[in-house]
Amino acid sequence: MPFRAMLRHWAAGGRDVPARLLYSVRSLQDVIYCDELLELSDRGVDIQLALTRDWPEDWDGHRGRIDRELLLTVAWAPEQRPLLYVCGPTAFVETIADALVTVGHEPGRIRTERFGATGS
Image (cartoon, rainbow, N blue to C red; front, top):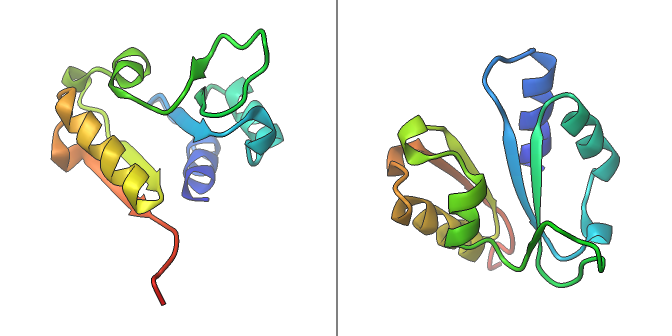
């Protein structure tokens, strides 16, 4: 997964620039690289989960898909001019990139990577 490589690179370099991962996943059981993400969290990566289908009763994180309100809550403010990387299936990437622009982020500071079926 691209986010894994990027976060590993960030952690290895002792960066002064903060890193945040907003990860949309169906349930806690579906979080890939969970142990590594916990370790990266301990090393300073701010990890935010958006659970879309199933969550524990005591879950106080985001419930549901990433939406405009969540982006306004956990994403950096547009005036901070962060570099934003969006990775996932094409429909997800397009929806999130559009939402980031809608909340005020510069399109040129949004990087995207799509994966999924190739249509062949």
